Length: 234
Image 1: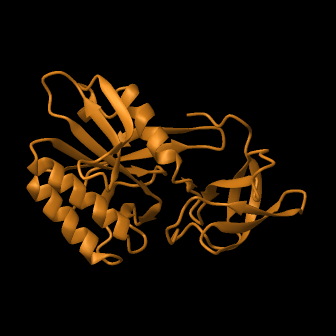
Image 2: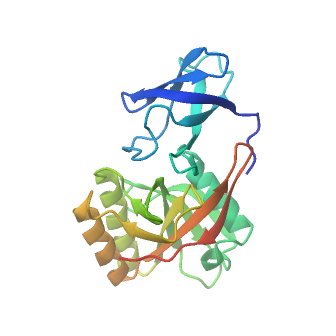
Image 3: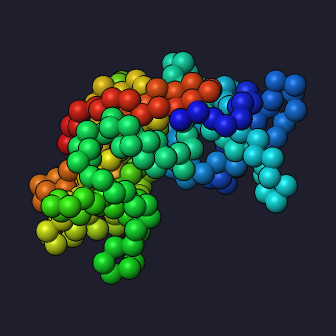
């Protein structure tokens, strides 16, 4: 997936109020950028880190700049825009990279679950195959080559796991897919040290038949591509 317009380089001054970050551009101008990432962004939000922004050029937005990428202290480029994770996974499915979904011929996005109280990212369908709900989570936290999710307590994440478990009980297929927007992960694990309840529930989900997958990405200031699967250690 290519960025439609060239990204703008800058240096992070500070992140605050979850959705905002002050960034100094190469011409020394300081702008306030919006970020869709509501997590703690551990390792990705230290002042002084190199960043890349997208100028949406949308006059209706209070903050026209969007924070897209950051370079960690170790030099790894990370995609911090959580809204891109679904697009990356959709592209990966269409290109056949996510082989576990290759037999499905129809992909629907943002589908309401049975009780209408939850939306699941994708519904995969094909004749003679059980319907498959696929939920995507964006991952930015990597430590010692191990990727972790979540990087903060995630009640929404718990809710989605329960929906996937329920879907399996109803005779369908469920996949929990972790999209790691960086390329330095050798394994993926639930972040038990941050949210033990989530880690326990993911284990229960897998035991009940929910499939857990993790894929990492190659990232540059011009494009992001989902690439290879990463083994999961529960």
